[in-house]
Image 1 (cartoon, helix red, strand yellow):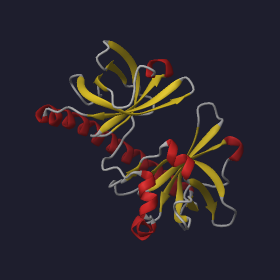
Image 2 (tube, one colour; image 1 turned 90 degrees about the vertical axis):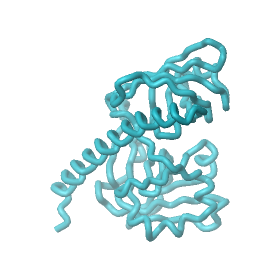
Image 3 (spheres, rainbow, N blue to C red; image 1 turned 60 degrees about the horizontal axis):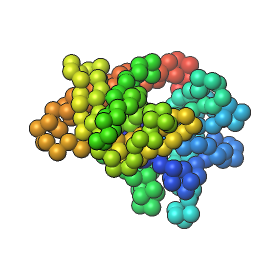
Image 4 (tube, helix red, strand yellow; image 1 turned 180 degrees about the vertical axis):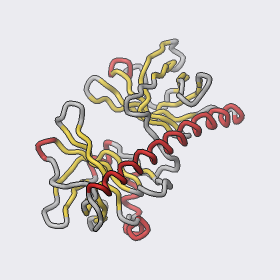
Length: 254
């Protein structure tokens, strides 16, 4: 997904129910897949290992978005970027890069954009083997719960908590968050507001929005967060470049 002007789209539970996503190779029938993440540059999808796609890196694919609210299905050409198995080997995640988005963006109807809720900030995840712990002071209860950072942007962040701890949170609850980013010298202590809570088995995914009303403090916090986001973008770009070089040697264009 070259050009990191990545307009991201939120994939909520409502979106997963309303939008059906399938992938089709140049020759073959569409295969329905699970939607993990989508941006202006591409899409991450998931399937069970038993339903693995018969596809290799750099191969041409077509992604179909279908919804009653769309009218006509949306079909976007792309190519397979990477494949990753889950730790237990039971599922597979695929990353697909859309072909030049400028040619397809006009096809992304306002109805679909409304479903995906366009973001204005780049969101990054920690290094895969790196666990960034957070401490959340819950409202005015005096209770503190610990979690792990899932992703972060200058507007907010996503966290993992145990399902039991997440029961103490509710939408729009104001909290204080403390975390140490690898690029910051000091611990960040930020005011946040709970925006969405999704329980998945014994874990809960929680989305928080930064909401400090002091402009000076907010700017200082954004500088630290922006530094981390930029550092991760550079690391991701480096890894992507190495993968492209590796792909080029495995699948030469001539």
